[in-house]
Length: 124
Image (cartoon, rainbow, N blue to C red):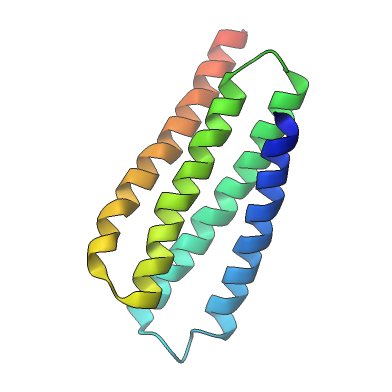
């Protein structure tokens, strides 16, 4: 399980860097500044939670019998897809209703952090 989380972390970090470069060098003259800001926010949260995925993968490796690090990683991955993904789609298509999905992704990020809090408290 830990290898999958580390693989997902590596893939998502790669994607976040690539999308960040696209935003910085390819979209600047194509999309409106407010949409570029939304895109950049998606990239920021994508990278933050890619690193979080790496951390959960390392925790899952260190504590192979524990399910909470794996659960946190799943929540972070879903959060990336919904939060960052919806901001990417919004910025690139101007389909504004997709922004309603963004907070759902944020809830998954919070669930991931709550899982790590619970894991830490439980492990004491």
